[in-house]
Each structure stands twice: as structure tokens, then as C-alpha cells.
Length: 307
Image 1 (tube, rainbow, N blue to C red):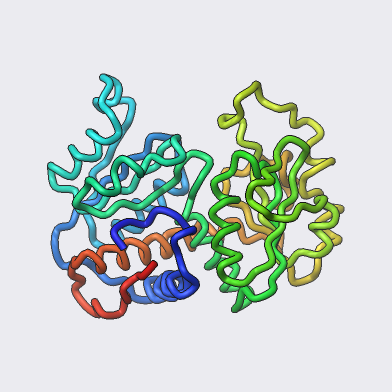
Image 2 (image 1 turned 30 degrees about the vertical axis):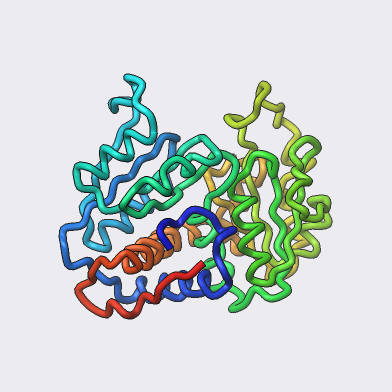
């Protein structure tokens, strides 16, 4: 595999390889033996994903080439392609890219001689977020088969919903959506249910924020969103004892989830963030191993990722 772009391209075996490698990285990270450089090209705001990649790269012993869009030549009209080619030309061994366009990678994937990782593409894909979500679920249940997983929130504008829907179905989970009117996307072929039904039947409830920045019109009024469509304390009490709460964050407290539930006993929100470092270490390591980069030890541990 040349690049890590979408969960649509991953087999169940590939996903398990990432999850297992992430757990191995937690205990014994492999360092790269040379001075390898990663460029983090974030064209959209990010805290968790960007810092998680930065921590993953540092833990792997890589040097990081920083990028600030505001002070880059993008302000002078430089294209994404020319920016990426510039970092390749000056010696970057790996590009991590987040961009507002759904298919930003189309113009780059066949033209670059270094691997790329998709750190978020418009409303279409967020594959590394999906892998950390799946790792969190796998740690909890040890399997995905027939788990009832509900993704609730702004489905229409969510790349997280799309990436997870594909990956979770690949792994054998039962995936459902729950959304306020106008936030649905029927093109994905996922059944919908109310938030009340979701809370009572799910093993995993994955909440999403309202993504105002991706709405074509003015922002929606969310003053009554929590009561009508969010996770209130009353709804949380009706969840099964073993059920857990996930959220990709940032969390809009008091909108999609009551603030008192963000760190409640069944919440795994901050566990997801921790898992993000190790899953991204695994993805980087597997991908670069495929490209022939050397580790200091146990290079054979990371199997070739086949899609």
C-alpha cells in the first residue's frame, strides 16, 4: 500500500494488524534507525489529531517539519500539490495531510514518491480517527461481531461517521445512525433510530458534535438540541450496564452530551485520545515498513499492510 487514505480500502485483516501493532507499540515502540522526517500539513484547525501525530512521530524517533498555513506560501496562492511537492523535495519522508476538500488526495497520490496519511478530508474520510475508535471498542469487548454501535449526531457533515461506518461493518458490527432532522445522510445505507431507542439498545454510543463550519447555510439553533437529540443524564441511565460512550471530540458540552457525562464511568472519550497516539504510531510504522524504511529492531513485527 502506497498511502493510508480511507477505511474503505481496508480489509478486516489489515485493521486487526493496525490494532495489534498499536498495542505492541504501547509496550515497546520501534524506533526508526535513520533521521526520518515527517511533515504535518494541516490546512484545517486541529488539536487532538495534530498533537497525536506529533507525539506518535516523536515516540518513533522521527523529526517533524512543522507547517503553519497562515505563514506559508499558500497565502500567496500556492496550491496543495505544490506545497506537498515542496516538502517532498526538501526531504520529507512522510506527509500527514488534513484538508477541507473531500478528495484532496486525488491529485497527489499518484504523483508523490513519499507516503501520505489522510488526517481528515472534508466530510468524506477520517481513517486514523476510525482506527483509534475501533481500538477503544476492541479493548472493551474483545470482538466486533454483532456489537450494536450507534453513531449519533451530525451524520450529514461527519467524516468520522463515514469512516467508522465502513470500518465497523467490515469488522462485523451492527451499525446504526441517529440524527436530528436535516442531519441525516441516507446515501450510506445505514438504518436510523431515535436517540431514545439508541440508548436502550446500544453496546457503544458514539456521539458527534454539530459541525457548524461545514454547513452551507447559517448555523443551526442548538438551544434545545440536548433535550431532543443528545445524551442527557436520564437517557444515560437507560443504557445497558456494559455500554460505553465515545466521542471523537472536540466536545460541545451541553449540546450533544450533558457536561456531567463527559467523564462519567462509562465514558471512554479520553481513552480514545490516548489510543490515538498508539494507533497513529502503528499506521506510520506499518506504512513506512511497506516502503522499506528501517527500524532499530524487530522490523518484521509490522507485517505488510495489504488492501
